[in-house]
Image (cartoon, rainbow, N blue to C red; front, side):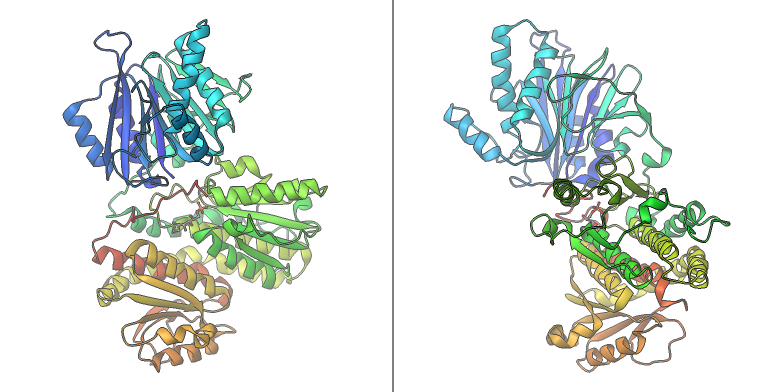
Length: 634
Ligand code: M6R
C-alpha cells in the first residue's frame, strides 16, 4: 500500500515527484504529499518545504502549483491509510518537531506504539496519528548524537542515523528521508517492502514500483531487504543493515514494466479486460509452442526434478489470486491427480496444517508484493527448513505478473504470467494469466504422472489454443450486452453469483469484482449450497447470476437455478449460447467449449458486467474507495 518516490539531481524535484506519484496512485489515493529542500536563498541550513493534501493527487498538484516547492532534492508519497484517518495531518511526509527532517514511508511500523510512548516520555510531541511519525523523531535523536561526535559529512550522518533507526523498526517498510542540513543527500531504506533506485543522467529517482520511472530511466537497482542507500549527485552508496558496503550492477527494465496509459479506453479496467485476448495469445506463444515432447508439453522454466515426487500441493494466495488458485486446485486434482489445498495466505500464517512430506508450495500474487502471501510463504519455508526437509527449496513456486518483485527473491521457481502492468485496482487480465499458468502446470504434471492419456492432454492444449479467438468474439458481444444489462442494476442492492465445480471460483470472482468496483453487496456460492441457507435472502429485488456450462454439473446447476426462480429472483444465466431453456430472464452466452476450459471464458461476463454497473453509477472504477492495488500490509 502507499507509493513513495524520491529524487535527487539537477532538475526541479517537485514536477518529477508529482509525475512519479501519478504513476503510483494505484497503490493508494486517499491523500498525498511531498517535501523538498530549498537551497535557492543560500540560507544555511537550507529550508525544508513540506506540502500535503487530503484526497486525490490533483489536490496536491494544485497546492504545489499555487504555493511552490522549489528544490532539486525531494520525496513524495501517495497514501492508503493504515494508521490514522486520511487527512492532511496524517498524510506523508511526516516531519520531526523542528521541521528539519522529512520522511515518507510505505508499509507498517509494527512497534510504533512502544517507540511513540518512549519518545513521548522524553518530551516529544506528536502531530499525527501515523505509525510513520516515530521515524523522523528517532532520526532527529540519532543525528543529535552523531553531531556530538561530529566527524562525518552531513550526508554520511543522515545515512548512519537512518541505518541505526531502521534497526529499531519492526514490520515491513520502505522509507525515503531528507534533512535540511544535508541538501545533497537522499537516504532510502527498505525491509520487506519494495524500493527501486532508478539511475538517470546525473540524477536518481527511487520509487516503490517501476511505472514511476517511466520517461526517467530504464536502468534500475532494486534494493534488497535490510539495505540502506545514500544518494548524492555524485553517485550511490549502498549498505547492508550492518553498515557493510554492498556492490551490485544495475539491471534494465523491459518496456512492458513501465508503460501505463489508457489508450482510448475510459478506464484502465476496461482496457485491461480488452487486453485479455493478447494476454492469452502471448501465453500460448511462449508456453505452447509446437513440437514439445509429450512428457513436457508446456514450456515452463523447470526441469524434470521439479515435478518428480510431488505428492501434495498447497497454494497460498489472497483475493483474486486465491480464486485463480481454486481453479488451479481443481485442475491439479481432477486433471493431474494430485491432492491440492488452497489457503487464504492471511489465515495460513496463523493456522497452517501439519506438515507433510513431498509437498509443493505455491504462492500466487500478481503484484508479487502482497504482505500476507509473502509472509505465509516465508513462514512455510522456515517450518520446512527447521524440520530438515531436504528438497524444500526446489519445492516452492511463485506465480506472478512481476518477476522483479519480492516473491521472486523469496522462492526458487517462478512462473511469470507476462500479462503486462495492470493498473486498475480490480484484477482482470492478471487473473486470466494466473489461470493459464495453472493450466500449464496441471498439463505438465498430468503428462509426467501419466494421469491423463496423450490424447486427453492434446485435446486440452488444442482447446486452450482456441481461447484468444473466443475471447475476442466474446468481448465484441458481451461489452454491449453488459452495458444494456447494467441499467437493470441501478437500484440493486444484493447480487448472488452461483457456480459449481471448476466454475465455482469464477462465481466467487464475479462477486468480488462487483463488490470492488460497484460497492454492491455480492456473494458467490456453490450453486448446490443455496438451499442450505442463502436461499432465505432471495426475493424479486435480488439478482442471481448463474454460471451454467455444459459438463458434469450442468443439469444440477439448472435445478439450483429453478429454486431461485421459484423465489422470484431476477436470473441472469452465463450459459452456452445453444441452451434451450426459458429459465433465465437474461442470457450472457458462452461459446460451446468443454467444461475444463470454460473458466477462461466465463470470466468475461463477470468482469464486463461489474465494470458497466460501476460505470453507470459514475464510480471511480480504477481507484475504488478503500482499496489499493498492492496490499503490502498485513
Ligand atoms: O497482488 P496479489 O495478487 O497478491 O493481490 C491479492 C489481492 O489483494 C487482489 O487480488 C485483490 O483482491 C484485487 N483487488 C482483486 O481485484
